[in-house]
Length: 389
Image (cartoon, rainbow, N blue to C red; front, side, top):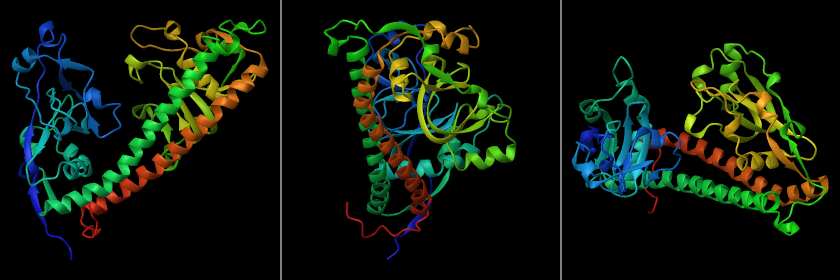
């Protein structure tokens, strides 16, 4: 039997709450604070559902100094400006800055269903934004957004459970991959920093060299693509780079395993620049990253671990527009081991990276499944009445 659905507004499902920023001129608002305070920037690289804290905490004094308020656990955070549409669930009591219109669900609204409902309506909400400098969704606008939901909260829970089960597996795979990478980093440090397998001393047949001896750069293979070609590839292959630059940068389709190293810090987050990305398969990339493979026995995986543990901040140039030039990238001092040791190390880490790739592929498949099910579940096209939770 098909469940009963109703049309309502977001304000019918919960209380819409804004946020605020305590004065940054008063250190007592932030120093030694233990109250989680979330900004849209905290969600810019956040890939899970439940958030526990942001980059900064605030103090009780900071909380009382402005109009932000404590939000209970399971509140759904929705960024309302710069940009619109970052979504997360409060894992514990926390507050936000003014860049959010969060929703505290009513007793007859399931918080997990509400989370997916807002994800489903993200584009609709974004289109309701207004403003000249940047778009923003006001509190009144957020409250008035019309949605359609099951009347029965148990039906909401069943829908949320279907989607949540997929995200549970995605988040588990992500956590496993983080652990696998940590293992690989630990082994790398043991071998090439602490020299533990060699009695704590660098072997005599190892030497100091520079990165130009072990890397190959493929930046020159990029060629201009027509708009139609870019549109076609965007629907098939992953894209790495700044989407805002897609209309004027050169792009090229690559196939294989590569290391991407951020070239332009104005395009990528400056606080994390330069960024490393381990990529594989067919992908396309713009001209804001160096495309790197290895030579002399250096695999892409070894290069990834090497650059992760090598401080290359000193090769970044430019105050306003930070950059990493090919010339500077080729001059980084490194330890070059004998080929036998390098091959032995590679055999130890390859199974870890094979599992990382396997998990990533599964995440991609699961994400596509979730995104396919989301509109069908939110439109009541799929009967979930028989699902037991």
